[in-house]
Every structure is written in C-alpha cells, then in structure tokens.
Length: 614
Image 1 (cartoon, helix red, strand yellow):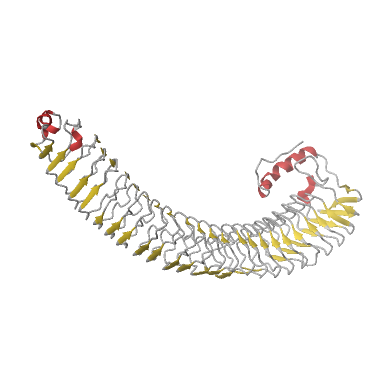
Image 2: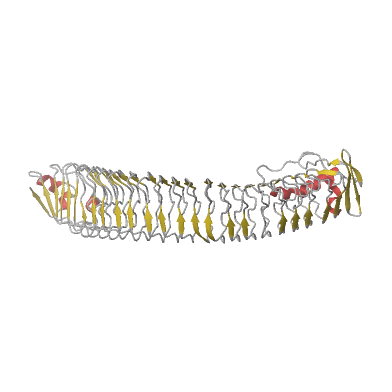
C-alpha cells in the first residue's frame, strides 16, 4: 500500500487525512499484537491502557506515507499512558502519531532525541516535561496536541527547537525554554493561541519564519543581548502583542515580522548596527507612536510601516539612500518628514495618505520620487522640487488640498499624469522652460488656479491637463506645442481668450467644453483637424478657421450658442455633415472672395442666413 498526500498541502492540514490513514492501517492489521520488538534492542508491551517501551537504544521510525507502521498503531486509541523505560535513547518518527486518548508520557533520563511528528495529533496530552539529556526535538514532534498546556524544556540540552514542534498547540500557555537554546525554528509555536508570555533564554540568537505567528494571546517580548535575526512573519497577527524590546545586537527583521500587531504600542527603536528590515515588517501596527532608525541604515523597505496610523514622528537615518513602496502609506498622524541629505530614491506611494503631514524636506540629492509618493498629504502647504529630479512622476503630489506653493527648478523635463491633480489651493504655477511634456490630467481640479506660465519648449499637453480649473484666467500656449489631448481646458469657466498655435495638428475633442467665459479664440494656420465638441458652451462670437484645416469631425462646431460670424478660408466649400453645426446659430458666414456662390449651393453651408465675401 502506498498513501500519498495531495500536492501543495501544508503540514498541519495533513492531519485532516489522519482518519484515512487509520482506516488503511486497520485494513492491513486485522490482528492486534500485545507485545513485540520496536527497535534493535527494544521491546514494547500494552497492558491496561499503558504502552511500555523497554530495552536499550533507539526506536524504529514509522512512515505513514509509505508502508512502515509501528506495531501498536491499530491500538493507539486505547492507550492513555506511555512509559519509556530507562535505556531508550530516541523516539522514532511518527511513533505515537494520532494517539487521541493519550494523557500522560513518562520520559527516561537516557532520552536524547524525539523524532519528527512523534506525538503529533495527541489531542488529550496536557503536559510534557523533558529530561536533562534531551538534545534534539525534531520537526512537528508535538504539533496539533490541542490540549497541551505546559511544556518544560528548562533542564534539557537543546540548542534548537526545530520546525513546527508545537505548531497548533492551541491550549499551550506555559513554556519554559532551556538556557542552551540558540534557535527557534519555522512554525515552532505557530497558532499557539493561549500563549501569553515566553521568556527567551540568554543564548537565543535566531527565530525562524512564522515561529510565533498568530499567537494571539502573546503580550510582550524581550529579546536577549546576542539575538540578531528575526524571521519572516515571526510574530505576524499577534493581535494582543503590546511591547517589544530589541537588543543592541539585532541585525535583521524579516518580511511581515510584526504584521498586524495592532496593539503594539509606544516607540520602536532599532539599534545602531541594525542592517536590514524586509517588506511589511511593522505593517498595520496601529498603536506605534514613533520610530527611531540607526544612523547607518541605508534602506527602509516597502510596506514597512504602512497603516501604522498613530505614528507621529520618525527619526530617519543619516545614511538613508532609499525608501520603499508604501513604506509609510496611510500613517495618518505622521506630522513631518525631514529626509536626510543622503537620500536618492523614494518609491511609489511611500508617504501616500499621510493626511496630517505639515512639513516636508526633500533634499536636492534625490534622483527619483515614485508615483503617488505624496498623494493625499492634505495638510502640506509648500513643495520644493529637489534639483536632482528631472521627471515628476504620475500622481506624486496629487490631492495636496492645502498646497499653496510649488517651487520648480530648471532641470525638470516632464510632468506625469495626475502629478498635481486636485490641488485646490494653488493659485499661480510657473513651469520651467525645460519641460516638454505635461501629462494626462496633470493639474485637473486645481479649483483656484488663476494663472499658469507654460514653458517655452512645451511639445505635448496631455488629456484634461487643466480640466476643471474653474478660476483659470490667464494661460498662453507656446509656439512649440504640437500635441493637445482631449478636454485640456474643459470647465475652465473664467478663461476669456486663447490662441491655438499652428504646430498643433488637431484641436482634440471637448478641448474647451464649458469654458463659459471664452470670448476670443484664435486658430493659427497649420492646424489640420477640429475634433468633436471642442467649443460647446463658450462665448465665442467670431471664429476664423484657417485654410490648413481639412477635417471637421462630427459636432466640431456644435452648440456654439453665441456664435455670430464664422469665417472660413476654403475657396471651395469643404464637404461637411449636418451635425457639425448642430444647435449652433447659422447667422453670418464669411468666405474667400469669389466663392460665395459655391457656398450658397453647398449642402449645410447654404443654411447660413448671410453669406458674404472678404
């Protein structure tokens, strides 16, 4: 017989399949022996619900996945006590797996090792006291012992607790560790939800991944001097953890090590010499109030303090080079970020949603500020772009509700989409001449923006770049401009005049839609296409279309309710659809000398009440 677990199944979930293993075993062992051999020099005996192992040496291993079973396996449910006599040196792998009635175990002084999964799933076992000579407890040895309340390892010679040894011991509340212990392995105490305190021995140096994950009753941790490495998710989701004390020897904290420890409070002080913190190390630690980094730390990882809503102050290291994605995102009470001169890179969303930040210092040495890095820092009043920045990334300073002043420098070459979206306190913006591109909705919904000075070398204005800037009055498009996106000035209700330079090949759809104060619109020769609905609800009364325009899209001149005179430069009427002038008064049409007769015969054009030549 060969029993295989499903692929990718966690060790703990394999216990869901224990009943299947038991049934298979019963089919094989229909006759139950009461005694026999269980090692080269070991014998076993069952009498009155007591299993006794006697002799000298190590017990045989069991392999439930293969075909090797302990001879007493079929009788395990009747065993309440196990006595391991003096002389037994090792308990074999899976030896007492699934002994669901086991309540008591007596270990000999001679015992030096307990094999993997040896007592796994012994759901009535309540206490374990290990002997002095014990040097090794292998993987998952006591996992899923759900009634286990106390474990005394204090007098043993253990150097490490291997992976998953007490994984899923949901009643475990009292653990006494030996002073010889230097390493606690992956998953060692994972899901021990009753564990409220665990004093660490002085020689402890490392804790592995997930070691105390979801120990939801754990309240305090103090690491000894000499401790240096904390694995990923080691204390993740320890939702009642309140305090942590780090030693001066700490060097490494893994991914999500304290993730979602929502009650962890006070100051987080990382010692001098600390070198690396991985992503999400303190993510969602909502009660932390301050963070102090060692001066030598060069990188703050992504998500490190995301959603730490009560952090008020952060003391950044003087050697800091980079800040990772979302590192301080949604730290709502962070009031300032005085970043060191050494800083070169700020990753996307690093300070996004820091809604009470009032003070920000960006050193000139910064080379890159990532997308949305300061989006939603609603109390920042002033921004000075560092001289090392050449490109303002997407959304980086969007939703700065209180920002009144943006200081640019001459090295900037492009402004990304949404870069200053919804900065309603801005009144005047002067963009340096080196900028050639302004992206999609870059200044959209800057409600109080009145005056914009565009760069002399500007080539491209993205879609909706100044849309819904309701108070924008003064803006001049440079002659270098060649590309204008849709709806650039949509809802700029106070704009009165503007000139479209000839380098722009197309006036895009909805460009001036709802510019209800726009009276003077000049289209320079060189423009070739007028898109759909660009002039709806403007006050333009006279419009001259140059000869270079050869395409009028549907509704190109529609709903120009104040249009009195339209002047065209085509000597031969341009064929157009009726909807091009939909809802526009067709009063006066001025055409080149000698072409009036042709216009009076042409479809749509002939509908004008007055056609005259110039």
